[in-house]
Image 1 (cartoon, rainbow, N blue to C red):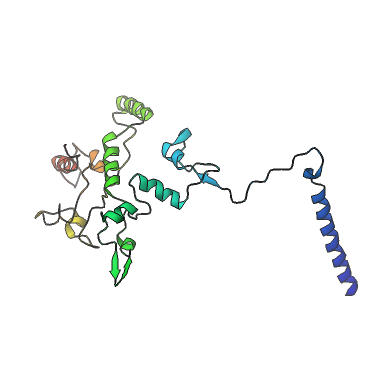
Image 2 (cartoon, rainbow, N blue to C red):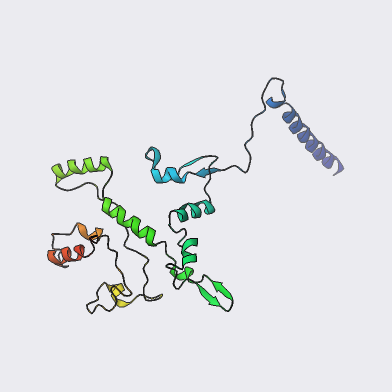
Length: 237
C-alpha cells in the first residue's frame, strides 16, 4: 500500500508541474508577442430591440450585437415611454392616474396588493388600441408582397398574401372576472351587455373578410356575413 500511494503522489506532482510549465510557456510570455485580450466576464451579447422591430437585414427573429443589452428594466422603460404595457402590467403613469386599473389593486387594511393582475392582467391599453387601429388601416404595406399579389390575382384569381391578423382583444372592462353570456356567445338581442360590459373591437373582423359575398354551407347567408363584417369596420371620424 505505501508503494502504491507514493506512486499516486508522484503522478499528481508531475501533472501539476506539467500544467505550470505549459502556462509559463504560453505565447503571452514570449518577448514581442501581445497578450491575448480577455473580454470581461460580465459583458454579454445582448438583444438589439430596435433591430428586431426594424427587421434589419430581413431578419425577423432575435438579433444581438456585442456590448448592447436590453434587460427587463430596459424593456419596461422603453415600452412605458411609448405608452405600452410590459408583462401585461399597467405603466407607472397609468398607476398614478388610476387609468384602466379597476379591479387590479386590493387593499387589506393599510396594505395595497396588486392581486388582480394575477387574474385580470392585460397588455391592452389606449396606446395599444390606437396602434392596432393603425395597423389595420395600413393593411398590406410590403411592396414585394403587393407586387406578388398582383401577379397571383391575374394568374390565379386570388391574392397570395393577406394582411397580418390583428387580434380582437381590447382590454376594455367586462363584468368582473367572469364574462356575461352575450360576450361568450356573441349574441345579445336585448342589448343587455353590448356597449355596457361587453365591448367589441372597432377595427374590423379580418377572419370574416374572405367570406364576404359568399354563403357558407350550413352556416349563414352572404348578406349576414357582410352585415357582421361591416359591424366591425373602422369608425368614421
